[in-house]
Amino acid sequence: MLSRVSFALLALTSLFASGCSNSQSTIVCTTSLIADATKRIAGPHWKVESLMGPGVDPHKYQPSASDLGKLSSAKLILFNGLHLEGKMVDVLEKPAKGRRAVAVSRSIPETDLHRSEPGSETIHDPHIWFDVRLWKKCAGVIRDELCELDPAHAADFRANAEAYLKELDDLHKEVLAKAAKLPAEKRILVTSHDAFGYFAAAYGFEVHGLQGVSTASESGTQDVQTLAKLIGEKKVPALFTETSVPSKGLEKVIATVRETYKIDVRLIAGDDALYSDALGEAGSTGATYIGMVRHNIDAIVKALSP
Image (cartoon, rainbow, N blue to C red; front, side):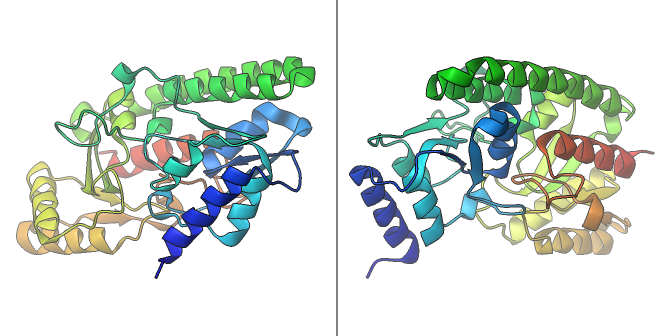
């Protein structure tokens, strides 16, 4: 008997192979981050939809029947790539009549990509958006795809992209300046999963995640003990939950640190939790990519300041 995921993927493959569609006026993005950038660049000319809403973990995402319908009717599909979308990538990368599926990460040089684990030569860390400079490259891919898709509005797409890229330049400088307020020895970021590697490299942090690059892998007792030892030895004052990842693992770490090392470590949650794999709800500080990045650096500097 087919599992729910296998059935959904089989149905999705069939839709792509048949090329059937109800409307060819929609751009579908897998994540809310990609959808946000696409809306900024597309402006009023195209309808943009996101498969994964606020707080959705893309590592564990399972397409629903309505998602399959959106994909079947899309003129353009934009996805992150680098295995962020898991098994969906195998389907998304297959060509289909009347539509195009593009990984927004495709223009990033391999030399700028991080390995997802030591010794891995083919699997890369997909969390490229945490380095604003790499996200600019993704925005460039979106711009180019829109211009090819709809040449009549190419001038608008280029103008919108130019304005957006300028904002991203300013955002990168802002994050650098705020990070510099923290002494180097205080820039130790501990989170639910290992999603902030690009952030660390770009802005001068040391990062540690309880889980690996993908939340599909579960943490064990040894992971908790290892992380607790690091926190105890370096006297890290705070651990950060993520809006798209359960916090129970970090709660175990904190309990172990308090019991073993007698250090009162804080768990940063609620309104100060970090946005990692998805944007926030409409109206929240993380409702847009720029808002998400600004929220994260502000929360980090506030919690780790001496």
